[in-house]
Length: 286
Image (tube, rainbow, N blue to C red):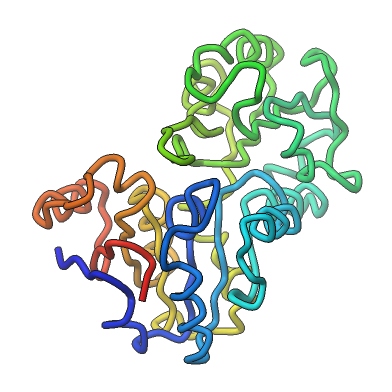
């Protein structure tokens, strides 16, 4: 597999860029070196840029996070998150899985994720016995982000009442700084043997790319490239949606393959995951 040092060699092949956030644009705390400059150069060349993230909170909330990191809103054209799509689906109730849900949700996750339930999208209840479904947005501060087994009592209680799980982040892990933390998908894996009725919103579902293309204002998918650090969500989702993909060697990829990855090992990993990225890229930089 070819490993590019930056985006410059292939930048003009594409008019639209779909970028993962955690692990590509930033490390959960600050943008990676060279990212603002790269985005600025793409915008100067007239490219459209949309962030697509499996973060379990609404797009307006994520925009505020990026503001606090110092990332200028002029450097991108929009944000679509799994939390935003979840909120829309809960409000519309036009998808068959959502149409059968009652309004009351037993929530596992931190308070910062509650934007997915705002404006009447769901009514939160503290007792699983009173709930219609389990809203899983990931780990919370009390039980922590390192050991998924700490959530087993709550998951067993939800399963005892046969609550269907709405998983708002299909990622299993994420890098925040130098720490590898669990995400909502890791809790979904534990819940599946107890209750198989689970709906995951986000990459790699190709449906989440439709609102992204709407924001890009593009219909020609051959002129759009997606960049992500995770094969089974970012790369698989792009491939399923008919987009080219670049595998960023930052975030989880850097954690797993180091600073100087072997191109042949990357090729074998991609083959095992059933994905075929255009190339790997050492970082989102020009």
